[in-house]
Length: 312
Image 1 (cartoon, one colour):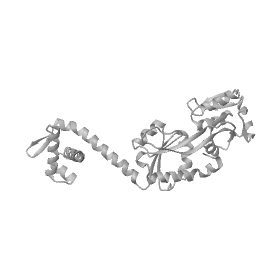
Image 2: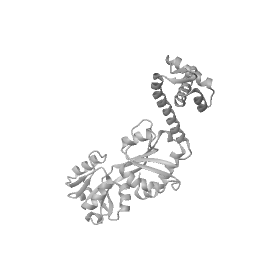
Image 3: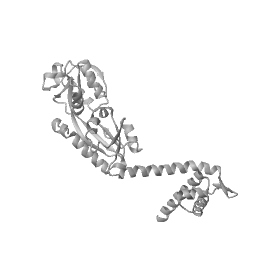
Image 4: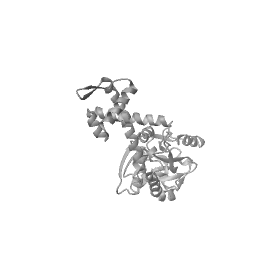
């Protein structure tokens, strides 16, 4: 096994020497770039030619010229070395005590409401630079795995073997409405209060949709469904425009109502399903100081809301 490891390392050094010769056009320049002797570079090239059983360079009058096979090989070698560099950049980034540049991807609602609440309270935020992108769950998985993002925020776990999802909040369902709506005078609502009301609804793909429908059937409720959308911020905005009701999670409802003083939310009895909020970091940031600082910042940012709204 040791010989195999040594062989792989020797091959890697030979490929690196080959790429340097191709780039510099000579053994001399390759040796200078790599900080080794010219005979060492020549030996690496000879090893490759022996291993591949083909001539990679033509020697004429003290100069070398790459063969067509060398030009073809260069594409593979450059891809290999670039992949190694990328791996080291990833894991070196993860070993830093704490990142000063944090790349975040999140669902639309998280970008609009949850992240602003978090970023203004994030530890060291005065010296940190944030890059935020709205992304689907599939896009977030790719971004984390391919080192295009450091952390992702979603309401469902990201499905990938190398990604660890951490739930940080769990928000119950409430009813959002204009403050001028007749039901806004109630301290809490019962399901029968929803009968005949104008509604903004979640789509069938929403995890809360089956519970909503089951309660509607149980109480034989008939509502006027004006709009169906997966975007909670749009739904709450249209609830004001249409003088309608929208059932969503209390965290997003509270943060949105803080910004829009014309809206309020009320508890609804028997609506028990909760929306979970998760964050996940890149595989190379797991167990790093950056991840620990992020956990502390999330706990601090939502502690007041958690104690008041019972977010768990």
